Every structure is written in C-alpha cells, then in structure tokens.
Image (cartoon, rainbow, N blue to C red):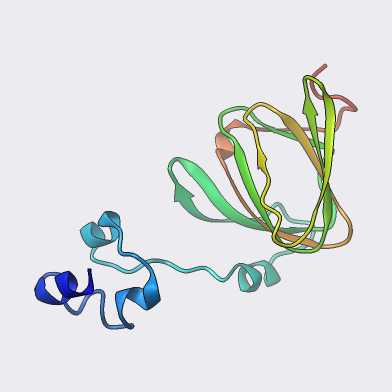
Length: 153
C-alpha cells in the first residue's frame, strides 16, 4: 500500500507527510477522494472541556448517526433510540446500565473499556457512579427521553 501511495503522484505528499500510512492507519477510499487525512479526536481532552451537567458534544457524523462524547454525573431516567442502535464506550468512571427488555429489566455495571450496544427501540437508563466520560453513537433524530417510572407505558 505504501509503495502505491509513493508511486501515485496524486497521493504522494498528501498521505506520507506525517509518517508512513498516517502512523499505521489504513487509508480509506473516502480519504483518497477528499485528499485529506483522518480527523483524530482525543476523547479525554474533548471531555475535559464539557460540563458534567451537559448532554455531550457531537464530534462527527458516521453512517447517518451522530458520534459524540459525553461527560456527566446525572442523567435522565430513561432514554430510547427509535431509529438506530446506540453504541457506547466508557472511558472514565463507572455507571449502571438498565435495559427494559420484553423479558424484564437487564442490568450491568460498566467500567472503563466497556462497550455496550443498546438495541434500537429498547429503553435504557444510565446511572453514573460519580462522573462518567463516554463515547456514543446513535441517530440523534430518533432519541426520546422520559422521566416516567416505565416509559413503555
């Protein structure tokens, strides 16, 4: 791949100026079309500038979903994503995640490194144990929030 880049005059100088293959990352066809490098976000630095009471910050759009970072110490009782699944990755802190499934509530404690995927249409609650920093990805347009004891009713 590196030889192809060095031989191609359109790509030479565009993708090799910061090191071979952008420090080991593969070059995607989208990057070649844009003739630009990847945008790298440092999640912990981004989160440090967020309020613990905020809902987070969108970093990018990915396949029609919002990719963002959140830092929080409180959270609405229930949240549901009716259009897409929600991907989460915990970076700092711990939280209890409850999913309201047809078979009853399913609970898990998430720690740094945990990567849950909440299925589309499943109401869930994230209750932080102190301050939590996490990455999330979901379709923001289909998100609903509820303070009801059971949002399915």
